[in-house]
Image (tube, rainbow, N blue to C red; front, side, top):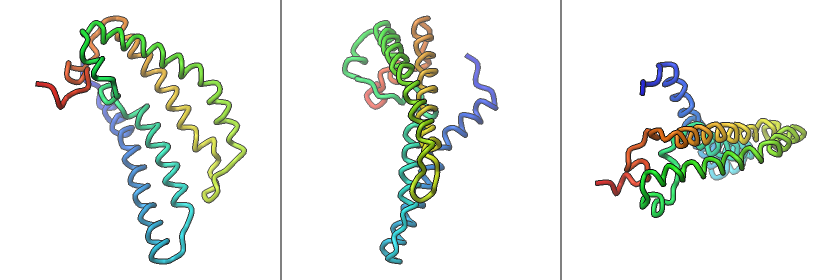
Length: 174
C-alpha cells in the first residue's frame, strides 16, 4: 500500500485539528463565563451557546471525519475471541446494518436540518440549520466510511490493522 500523498496528509491534519480548535474555543468560553459570573457578577449567555454548539460539532465531526476504524468501540469479549474470518464477517454485517440505518434516516435528517432555518440561536443569532448541518456531514461521511469498510471486508482485504488493533485491546497484547 502506498503512503498517502502530501495533500492527503495535510487534509487529514486539518480535519483532525477541527475538534482541537473547537475544544480550545470551549475552554476559552468556559473561562470567560466563570470570570464574568463569579468575578464580575454579570453572567453572559453567549458562552454557553458557543460551548454547546462546539461540543455538538466536536462529537459528530470527530467521530465521522477524524476517527479511524481502530478508534471505534467494539465488544472485545466476542470480537476478540473469534477467528479473523469471523471478525471479517462481523465487519460486513455491521457495516451493512449501519449504512442501512444512516441511509434510511438521511431524508428525515435533511428535512429536519433544512426546516431548522426558521429558528436562530438565542444569543448569537446563528440559524439552527447551520448548527445542525454537522449531523448531515456525520451521516454522509459515516455512510461512505462503512461502505468502504464493507467493500474491503467483503473482498477479504486486510483491514490495515494488526491483531491487537483489530480487536481493540492494545493494552493486553503480548
